[in-house]
Image 1: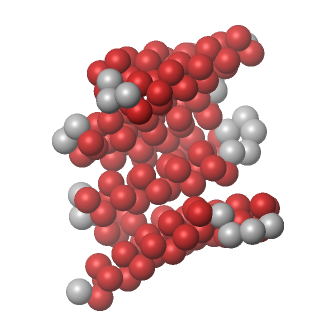
Image 2: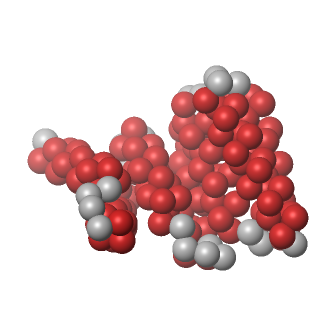
Length: 150
């Protein structure tokens, strides 16, 4: 089982590197392979990471609704992780709230902002210093406030 998990994690890392090199179609294939392994063996952190990558690729590729669904799936996986990974959760919250803003799903953003703020603050406390995700979460909160006030 560990080999399957390692393979899924490695596929996600290769896919992320391909994204960095602007090779989105290749990256998408690697993320899809990782997701199949995750689904077959119940590796929720790999499922989360692959859905996060696929969701971001879909959103940036103009397929917003598909991307939002993939990012929603990534967020659902977070409480099911085999081991705690707050950075991956924070990444999902960052990209998911951003995609929801872009699709004008403000009602869905509101409860996520509180979760995002809490998780980012916990990450800062864990590290004993302000972590950049706390700043990002505050920016997201400000963005929500701005949208609600206009």
